[in-house]
Image 1 (cartoon, rainbow, N blue to C red):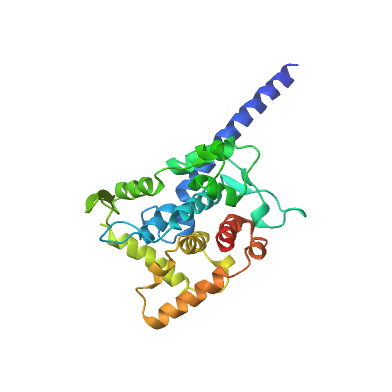
Image 2: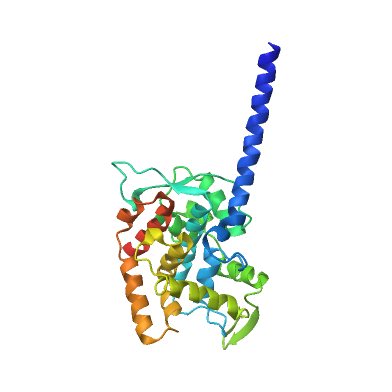
Length: 285
């Protein structure tokens, strides 16, 4: 009896230790995420949402184009991809009835906090939602595009402003007030142009000097950022500074990449399923 009791206690201790280790592993993954995939560990750590907004902002004016109505939903897609890359969510398994990415639901994998308010807020919504929703549904719900009044609670509010404040805290943007005749608007001009140039260069090189002609050999976060820049209608901002010949090459290679069949590509590497699922949503739209 004594031996059994001790074994039971040791088993409980082991389980608790495993839980602690699992939580520590999640934290470690978040801390080391960029070191493993971004190349230079000395760079400022940015989320995919922060990178997309930075690409969309006009450097001196500090705001995105008034004609861009895609960036809001693109940022929500970035939240889902970021959560997937951090091991917090995943798509339900592929079945005979649910082969398409657009049909598969988003499942909670881990509810360990990420330390990012927007990510954790979204994670909380996903955890509390039953039945589970698809990627397209989550992008619409997080953007507030729903006719169901009971689901308006899932809308993430002031996302651009909250992301901009994160970039201000990281020393990349500053905060100013500008007068637009009838109203005043808070703007966030770029102060750390070095960081933005590094981001532009990384994406430009991914389709020029470092082009591998195979998305599954690309760095996952770079692939995700290309997809999100396209979905947010800011990809041309990345290539506009290039010379004409390089601009044409970059745009053509990007088009070839983004025209791939997401359902086919997702079957080749489960780690990139969420990236292709987000692309499928925006290509459908």
